[in-house]
Image (cartoon, rainbow, N blue to C red; front, side):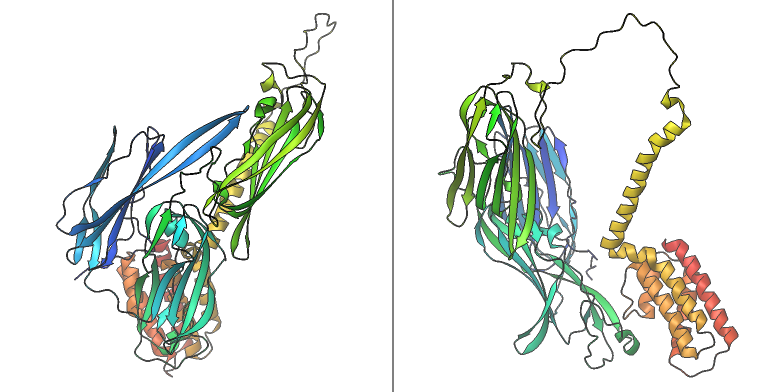
Length: 607
């Protein structure tokens, strides 16, 4: 019987290994570690480096009796880093090769994917075999589907497209606790991703006469790899309720929030399942070489550009600011620089770059600002520019450009002396740049009286306390903010940390019901025990049976004596919740004390 692996979202069984060697970067990953017989599994190997002189060969895989290689492909992408220092432009090219290998299993069971060896000159990496679980049959579930759809499937590298992730759930299906798929994490190797909304939107649809609840979320994505891109399937976890009896539909039935009231009426079992999104293949075309301008640095989209000077007239040797603003729809990271001619007439400093990204009408709108500090070397009327932005216009399918020229009147002043350029400092706010001093003060030789100075400040304990206190407060503030962020973003961690406090509150409620009818007291006690364990183990309290409760605690290594004590308490709670048997107050106090002791022992084990 095939052992099922409980993997959350995309599982990198090979791990994503980043190994740096002589400027090289190597990564290897697996799209999932559990498949059904007849499905494919994909291994991705990525290698990148600066100014590679030759293409690397395909990685070599060892032979395998469990899998057969059905397809392989190689994709190449490149990026450029541009820097301008004193009018000189330096470019560094980084080339990335992505290899994808598709394997088909030959049988079901716990199998081994073959290892591989990759070599490029003296750089060699070896990846060992990896365990994969292959099921005979996939989960037969027509009540839930998970689909990915792209607004375009034939597009250019770095072109903006919309991705919609949609989860459809049949409204009368016994499905609870649907997870939130981490689309960004799963697809970041293939796209730069920006979500268009904070959470999934819900609507109702009728498909084939059946009512469905549809949860959808939209993303703006930019492909970063060219060629035939096979988008990996994204895992989606959910809980299926296997019920013995079910009440009629009610307003409290909601797939994403569980059925809190189902636990009262239905003592059925639950099973965790995983559904994978549909496979999607995109054709991503590389930017054409024909017609590519010499000043093109990678900008793709549709843009506008404005340029302005903070002064129309300056003196030679006096600084002024050039501001260039690029806005439009596209990937902000692809707008690396603008081309400025006639920079040899000025002393130029590295620009200050800022970016603002907003979502407008379902389109990613970017505004990127370049601020340059320039110093004219000689007087006279001169042109700044032309200032040109070269970009690839995806709507037209060709390269385009925006250009403007600004005029500056330079009056007579102090010319910049050769060798003093690095002693001049700039102010972005437009303040005058001055050379404050070029010498040191002389030592006084006619001092008539010398007095002993005061005690050095560093010789005082108060000084060292004052020095140490700010970094300590900064560290404590960082740790507290990190704790707050994790409590807000990691549901399992938040439930674990709040479980004890929540359990004490529930036990207090039970104590307040000692003299109330037995069903109220034991319902509160039952809820305290079940919710504590569910929070500690990040499980759903709704539909948790005594069997599941006992199994989950044993899996976490809880002491058997404590587990049996808790099981006896739950069975006692069930007996008195649904019967009219009288219970003495002393017996209730004893049960409450037993629960407090058991939870205390369990806290030591699960903390």
